[in-house]
Image (cartoon, rainbow, N blue to C red; front, side, top):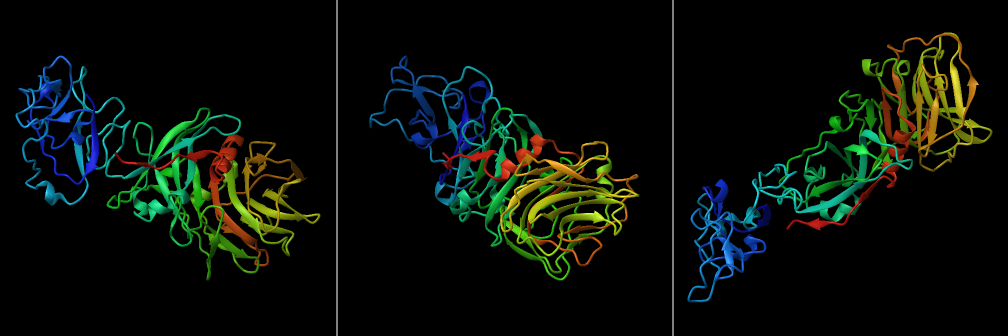
Length: 468
């Protein structure tokens, strides 16, 4: 026997008692509570059985004396439905007013248990079958399929994204707090909601259990206006991230709490993912004081990624996306947009105590006024470092200076976003979105998956389903 749950404006009596196999006793008031069976005059579900004269046999959750026995033939009035007037906690069905969880008796069982293998408890404590519906208090759901990256290699503990734009109508019916992301076994996954500039639904980020080599099906539930906020952004970004800025504001979504100081003004506009930060190329520069979690990251390897949109080729040879160097560039690192031969390329600089090491991309497709996803990894132990990616793909990197000496610690060096950390005449002219720093070197598979996730190539969203 399987116990399912449905939401109705009815007050169904659930009588705790010893039925067949020691299970709870359930009363019905109409056929809908009996699934494929019928509600009998005794108030218990009956199910088709040709060996019974009436053609019906009571289910396992009927009264202990009736469970599994044949339902008597029809009463004189010819009806088999009816039963006692139901009450729950002293309230009649007319007093409940709203949706209520109702248990369904699906008939006799040959095994033990009530919810089926793989089921797990819902937030409302409803009795249900995970394969049918997680929690009937949530009115809608959509299947979320996480596909493999292009090369099919798995990526573990990955933060994936689903755009909430297709859910705009449903989100108007409920608060964003009611969003839940669950595995196929109904295990909740950590998630974070990112709002757009007008505070409407933008995207939901969730920590996928695995990305590739095979597709994974998850579930997005919503439509419960009374649900509390269950988001946990720090858990979403717990796999090696030391800074994640969505630019809905200046806050950091990781547990490190690396909020940025935008100075007198913080400007925002539409971005590729909800909202983005705006830098005017004149005096905008956001900063972060020195922090242990941001100290000497290239020593053991690091990754920076972001969406960038240079507004022009700018008046500077180099426009800093993120800078953590001193005036002599002898410590720290820098990731910049570089103007070269009338084209826009990417440049990476690593400070060393005699002369810094510099490298740039060749032929990277950066265009003024167009968004592009960029990433770079920097690892002092890797002679081929840095590695640079554009649009999720590795780029050819030209070494401009080999670097001389050893890196110095940047423990006391602040970090700057959209400008130089030390030069008040160097700024970025354009927009930034989804800026991230990791304290580990991400693989090419990871960078590719990150890019695909934000462009719709990794996660697909199924049609809206309504709770039974």
